[in-house]
Image 1 (cartoon, helix red, strand yellow):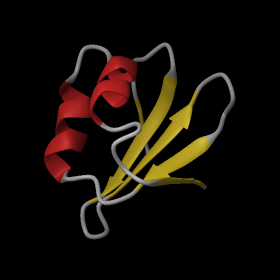
Image 2 (tube, one colour):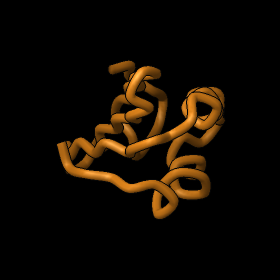
Image 3 (cartoon, one colour):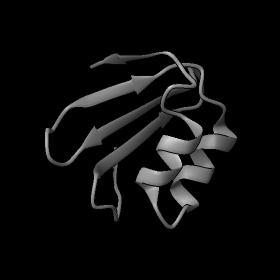
Length: 68
């Protein structure tokens, strides 16, 4: 997991072999795993100025997820 500069997201991890994107949120501390996320979207998330907006626009509600 890598700490990120975000008001909403604490840290992000990615496993290229399984295409699982792991996100830990700041306020709740909850950890979610988004499944089958292409590496290009992970790279876009990490490069984005607003990680929360990128997550909402490109990943949340578009990929299956589970609480970790």
